Length: 322
Image (tube, rainbow, N blue to C red; front, top):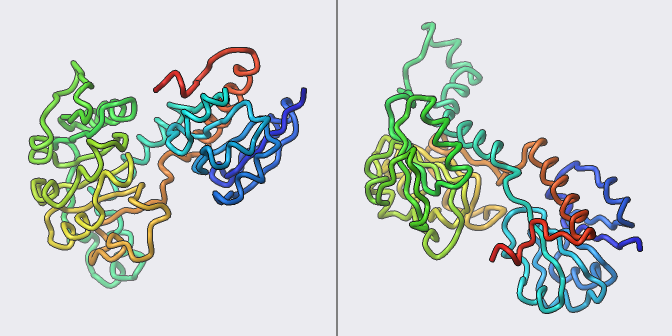
């Protein structure tokens, strides 16, 4: 039997080819789908793709033929897993596809901040370099990673890769386990307070939960070195944006890089966008996961999840992860 496949927010995957889905049936593609549109769009579906679109009892109840929900991401908090189980609807997700690209983006932003790339790029492009009369410019001091302490919040797969590369740069690595469960014989585990006080660079690679929500607030930022930088590649609400903006404006820390935000897309009136010295900030629109290669791996994993489901295998089933 050919399946009806509905892709609710395909725009989040970019220019991925969906031709591989033709093996399983007909697919209907939507760039984006509002919550109000879901019921109508999925009512005849056997398979539904979602990334951020919320699927709950209110709309899933309209999909009488639904057999499989494919979460086109790792996090599945947008899906009512309990209701799906009641209806015997399988839910799958994908993990590990973006490790390399998130690690790369972490270092791209760290190096930009450490080397004052924004300032010096503008110095040349603005014509100031041409006028300065000197072969170099030392207006903005910058520092090496070697000999510094790199603190990691969340030592999962991504955190471990960041730690290993930071060591190659010559940094000492310490980490704080937000769950209290992660331990490593390769790196020094410290308290949150010690991590704040000792680190020259802090990168966040932790999930959002009750222990990490607004973990980095004004009090935490004031405990950091004034010369330190903060990088958030985890989840937006782990960092209180209002407090970070205040800390940057007051010179409590040197700089910050954010790929994730409390609300996405970021609000136009976010205090982060009003930080006085723009060169203290590197901001990217939640793209650390999204290299061409990572999106290809993600889609191939989703296809493998579908194949496994219809072969009677429980591959990447969310209900087995809870």
